[in-house]
Image 1 (cartoon, one colour):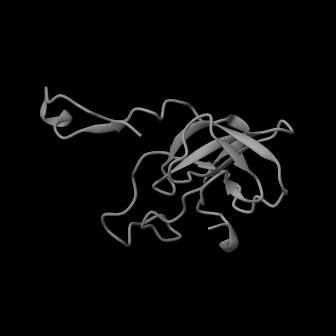
Image 2: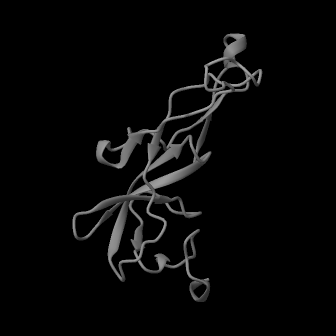
Length: 133
């Protein structure tokens, strides 16, 4: 993935970088709001643990970790950043019309073919079986 480095024009843009391949918004039927409880407060709402809370509002992406449907081919549509996992995820469009998120296999680019039961065609991914590696 190509990384775009910002040209320093203000102190806030110094040493800034962004991944240029990630440019899409998440699909609405694969995300939902996550209730972030705690934030350093007790049952009365009083701060008991300092320096906690705040942060940007995040949407949870449903990831298909099992990929248990055998031998269904899919194509990588987008590569997105998942703020809940601090990792990249791929939106896969399967042949039967279903769309799912999976963890981004190393080396996968937009347009690659992925098999539901075995992983990326030609290489292993994070959810590959041990005999496929």
